[in-house]
Image 1 (cartoon, rainbow, N blue to C red):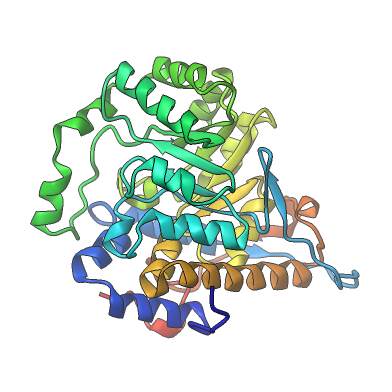
Image 2 (cartoon, rainbow, N blue to C red):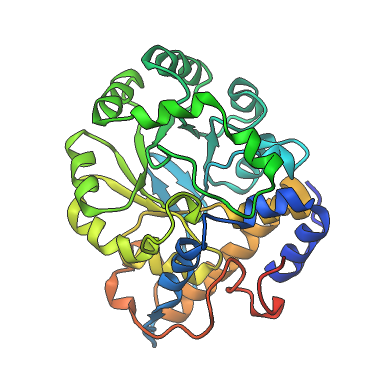
Length: 357
């Protein structure tokens, strides 16, 4: 890809994305359920933590790399699964996959994105994670997993927080009509037996369970041999009025007790956000809306450049709090603090002066 600087800051990137994206695509990416309280609590939970820097430490060499269940990543960030990417990035999920390969992180491929999983699997050689939305019976799931294995996806995620489609009131009537399909009803039938079946079918691949929001469910997931607990409230797009994901993290870390990896998404847009999550026990952080804005701004090159900016922020944060590798982080580096501005999807970018409609 070109070394051209596409945008200098994330502020510029978001403005570029807004210019490029049609209203329906913009509302799909930026919106959430009902009052959008869950979306804003995701951001508030991050903003309600302050960093506690340590000084007089040699931070001349910083290592931002991590290992996520056998996958080496340049920074502790993965590209969260997103549907409908093709509506705001010309090559759909191929742009995500190409950017992940070039930069050196892992991408999660959604069941409901385009092109087909086989095409994405063949696009690049780097490890990929396939995320399953259940759209059929057990045989449908088994057939899908056969395709996933044949396309050499090395990890699998099952999403379990979508029994009903959230009331997303920013979406147009046309968008909502496209999402009222009978196959979604299969999500309502997911049980812990489904979790066991998927684990049995994936032949030992690392297994992530996405949509965990309580310590109780995290403990049950560990009992079922899940390899990674994926803390997510779907970016606030499913159930409104839940806690922010970062508020759930300590409870879930305690319940898991080191028996599984923990990843998290929901409102993470800055390097400091990511460091806070790792300090409280997460192993990696997923980006969704930030990923979408980068793609909307400039496709795969835009996403690579966004990750480069994020790497710079992570490196700077690590150096300024006095750590040189991610394994040095622990809860002593964060503390509760008042938030300073009203939270919304763009509140980490104050020069935008509020959410962009």
